[in-house]
Image 1: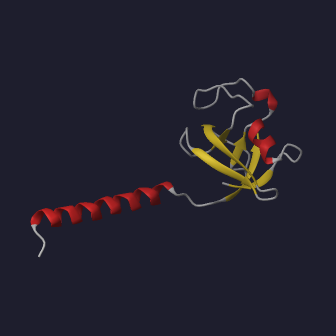
Image 2 (image 1 turned 90 degrees about the vertical axis):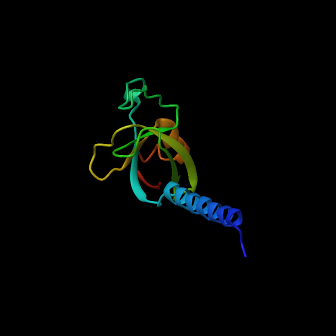
Image 3 (image 1 turned 60 degrees about the vertical axis):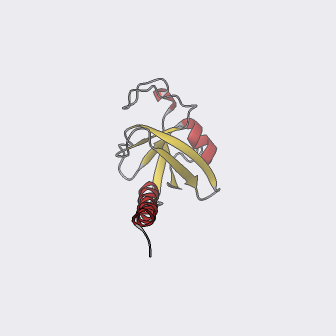
Length: 121
């Protein structure tokens, strides 16, 4: 027979575990294959939609809908290279493209010569 304080402790542990499962589930995102491009060098130093200045040497990106500050893991499936970029701008505004990467991110992914590639985010 459990007393009231033992029942409370058990119920509290179950509640905490349920909250943890819900939080972990909301953080995990599905993987998508999308078309990526990268910013032109002429945009270096210009203000982004978030208000920060675009620096081609930082790991940043533009995305149409994700909140500013979101960190994305971007992988080039052709060479398995990975970068983590921060959403600081809106775009790309060319049909069929989903993400614009900074020069530094594009270089790390090995996409400079092609300009546009399919990536996994």
